[in-house]
Length: 604
Image 1 (tube, rainbow, N blue to C red):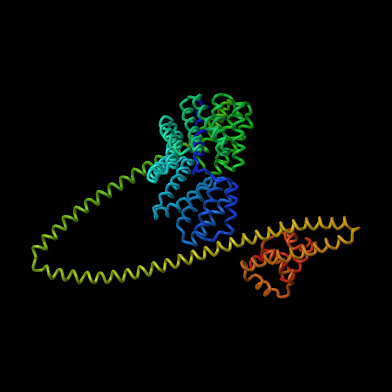
Image 2 (cartoon, rainbow, N blue to C red):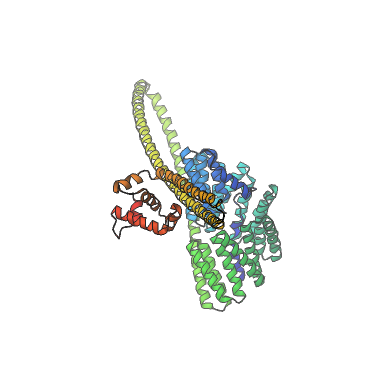
């Protein structure tokens, strides 16, 4: 068995779809997006704001997952409030893409399917193009090549209708990549070359780099390493010039894995090590797992057996945690290859069995899907035959009715009158039924509106709670800054003790600064707090009317689950003072030693 070529071949297949860019448009600079983020505070809450939030979520999709999700959820909330279907659809689509980059594929597909339901209702070609692209990427990573190829075929068809050359190229690229992953490089090359022509037409350098890389891999599969390294380097140079870290890492993996085949182990270790570092920075688990497997193989061939096996086992654990059977299978095969190279044939045999077990299960799943598809086609054809038979029967029956009507002309008038009377009665009943159905629909719509309003109210409360927590943290940072300023002013007072005309002015500034900061910060915080927790102060005073203003203030901060240190910094009091106030508060509220004060306040 050619262990090196087999393992590296599988290894490289895992990275084919990391080279496709979702939207290879010319990106705005980071400074431009910082300015656009600043616009959110002043722009009114209309559809323009929804579009800006979605654009920001798109921008941060693969750069800052948490920020992207925050903006897209804000867009979804506002879209639902405005009944803005376009915003709802694209917030779902991009959230699905964010979770794809977070390697949470089940959650990604959930959001994408929500978008698909709305897209089917509205016939939005642009949105359907994005849906099929994203779904194809997920199905590829999960090893569902049949579904992935169908997704890309739909993508190509819709892109031609919409004259979208960018996504047309992506769909062609996707179909070529699927042939590569199924070890069919000769069938992949026509798709890849056609995609490269489209990329050159729209001057998409990033897309050209991806295609050069995949074409290089096709040549590698066919054993032409010189052509492979030529195309890999062409793609790598474009990516370096663009500063695209994610794609640079992908190129490093391709080049490093090819160097393993060429027995240049030191060069391979260096390239794959750089790739792993990039994926760690990007927090991309799948990419890191794949690059680490190739790195483990290179280390093993270079004689660093223990380090290599530990790295491979870490990759296996990561693949299992991500529930990625294709990647897990590759881990087993890599470990078998390493064990075989180290003449540990028993271990190698066990790893190969584990690899084959997963591969067999994936093959069975693909066969079951093919059979299911054939069964569906058969049932559709059978149903069409039944419909044709019924139509023929109906035509014959209509002819018989016509002949019968002509034969009994004497009864025709009476029959027509009876039919008219029956139809009038039927129409009357139908109108009554329609009124009933409409009332039922209105009732259901009212229930849905009520549920949506409750959901929106809950989401608004959660948003306001985040705003309140942010305000508390802002007060903490401001107070810490002011404390530093006050300390410096105190130092300045000591330095001018011999100048009585200076010290009083500085002390006046200190006193004014302390008063203004405490008053204004707390006033703004208290206003937000009352808007969110409207009944807290009233409930607290009903429970214990004798609380002082300071104790009420500390109770409000404790409700936010702030620590003693944070409360002390916000309120300009010592930690001992805060602890003393907490003790008095517990005593006045009648709490026992086992009662949790913060939990008690949070329930009020």
